[in-house]
Length: 153
Length: 398
Image 1 (spheres, one colour):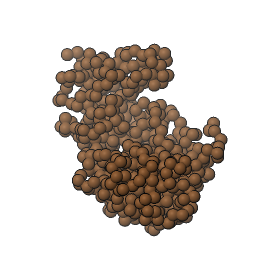
Image 2 (cartoon, one colour):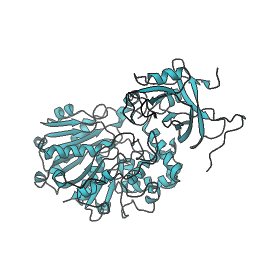
Image 3 (cartoon, one colour):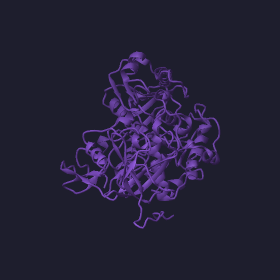
Image 4 (cartoon, helix red, strand yellow):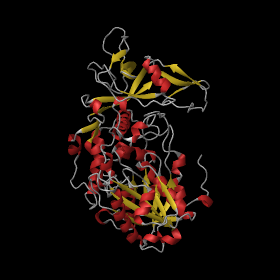
């Protein structure tokens, strides 16, 4: 298993696949974080859609993103709404702003005791399930292997 | 620059609320039909307006099956003869648009008396956010960033993400938010219709369980349901009704697009929002000159308090305070009865009941008729409904 792939801790609800988000989930299955990028204005966007919502061009590519981002908001569920998460509480969920601009909903995994918080740099990993892979984000590990810096304040 | 107000195209005071009615508000078991609650509310509204059932020829339903009842079944069961029917999904963000729609219908003669109807039994949906809710099935997440693979599947999740962003950006805390809940609870305690009967302190709020942290139990609205009916007519018919009209002076409708995000306001920086978007929007502020008022004339503010945090978002969106200052604005009794800008004087969704804020419209109407007793805002002349999503109505006493 490559460094950015993790095992699914348990089954989870599958994503709803549509015609225009299917490339996102196909790429995730290949352990790639791909987003739509406009061929005209050059910007990335999320969530997936049929055209560039920023300049209305119909020309785009599915480009691999850096996988780097920053937590912009983090919450913790103390209640489970789907039975698959009953044993995961408290469960953290976050909005992560990718380096490319768009924000994604994610969990924060492999936090290793450092409480995740807004401002923390994170990187993508892929959680392999039977029929899909789920992009997740973990605190960035410096090359030295020491703990990532905690956000100030 | 906002366009100058063109009074040739202004509905100011051309329409009015002529009657309001409600059922009892309560958390009910699932077999209780919203339709029976609608009947109670309709009877009261007709009596309030001095109208006969046969005079209702417009019907706007603000949530249908399964939590409510669709327009066709409502008209059939109540024996109404409707020539203008429409139906919207509800979140409270729809409400201003529905009232504007009713006003336009009566103004253009599509109906003489439009009944805006919201009847809800929340028990029929089970736990809001659980599997099987249709919002999970939307391709790119529901109206609250629902994303079940990540365990994000409830309205509270979205509001919590926005609230936490607000806390981080502006230094507000959960204890600050608790004061909003306490103030609105105090209003409910003066309202015999409200389902919450016990006082709430900041300590009670802070000690209550976390649901989606940072939000506590008492930051969440009720799931006590019921029905409200609000009858709208053109102004020339309103003066013949049983009570003084409550005029609809200004309107703003539900906004949508990438500036908007659930539980937030433009410029907060959640979901795909630009964090530097300015609020308030000059176009939105046109509601005031179109209504013939300035914001300083507003005697009370009513907003969709699905979660306490959205009170801050709405106050900032409409410019009652600067971005990042609402958490201070709502302290020291400023939004309480007797304060500078009373908010949600009947107890709102947080402490009265969740009739998608149509209970608030009933309260606004009663306030502007001087019927609110211990809750009465003295000499209330202009009240405003306004949400974090841009819909708004300015109401005027006759």
